[in-house]
Length: 61
Image 1: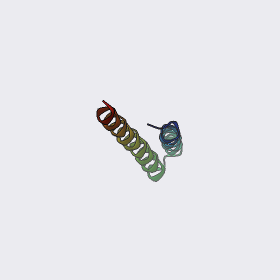
Image 2 (image 1 turned 90 degrees about the horizontal axis):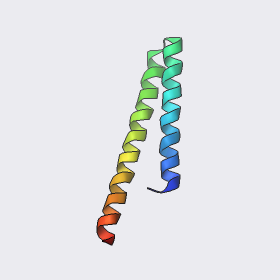
Image 3 (image 1 turned 180 degrees about the vertical axis):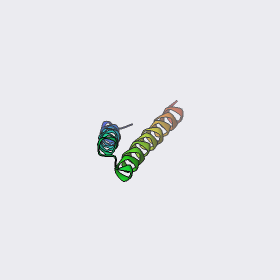
């Protein structure tokens, strides 16, 4: 995983956690859901990059 891609995914995860927390504090279910969705997107990005990394290892071995 490139450092830049990892940083973007991590930033998206943090953004989602903050947004979810704001939704919790304000009682806004839409904001909570959007925050959770961003966290899921970040997790998917991390998984995609992990698969790419493993594929590169296999090809290079």
